[in-house]
Image 1 (cartoon, rainbow, N blue to C red):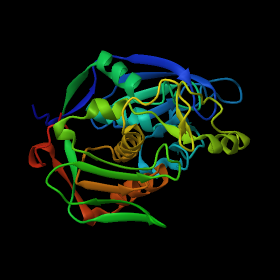
Image 2 (spheres, one colour):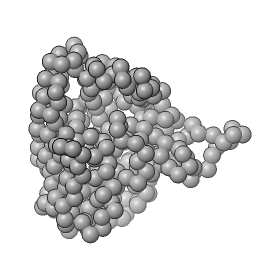
Image 3 (cartoon, rainbow, N blue to C red):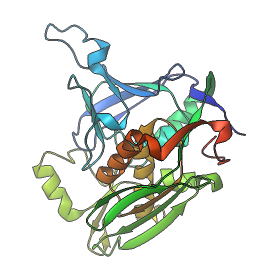
Image 4 (cartoon, one colour):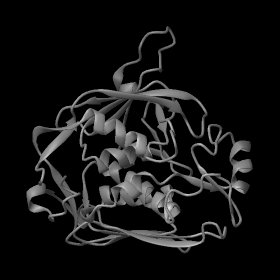
Length: 306
């Protein structure tokens, strides 16, 4: 069924866990929000010097491309007052894939929990909350001209297309990962494969990240770790294409910062949060390359309009 109205959560839901990079435990509470609200984070743990609550305009962080502070090892959002929240991408992907347009997210720590490294638990949480319609028309961002971001041989681009599709290719020196490609047409399903795909890294990267004060909450319980041709996780992969599927999940979560479903063909070679979020900002700021249209006028992509 095509949903032409905006959506929000049916009821509040919450979940707690440890942040991948900070190692700090935080509780995330997702709450329903009015039409046109979008997705916003509120840092409930931030206090004024006298211990009182800080004004909402200082602790609210909009999930939007212009608020991206850093995107090298996950998406880090920050508002002009300096309040920030890290590693939002898996939750943003789950909201998009669940069809949630408007949500207030309260968090009492600096980083969204990594959980098992995938979006599965967030999807379960959103299923528990349910999705309800609100009395406002839903819009899609329909691409009318191509846009592209490059860095060396890496690129992400979006082209006009009658439906939404993601073509993603990765190519790693570690032979356990290697070169993999996947095509995701959300109108044809495949969401379960996407959301169960976990984040990953090489064993050699971990030492450098921890020396930089990162990956402090990482473990084999929430990430896939490879060492050359070896996979260090005893249980193995959940899917033969788990590595490239996770990159597709990240791409979807990063583009969800646009605040509306994107209609177009998204192609990516060696994507990462840096390129993905730059493309999201380019789309948001290139008015002549896309149009916002009521959902009823957009392409009949069942997942896009679910």
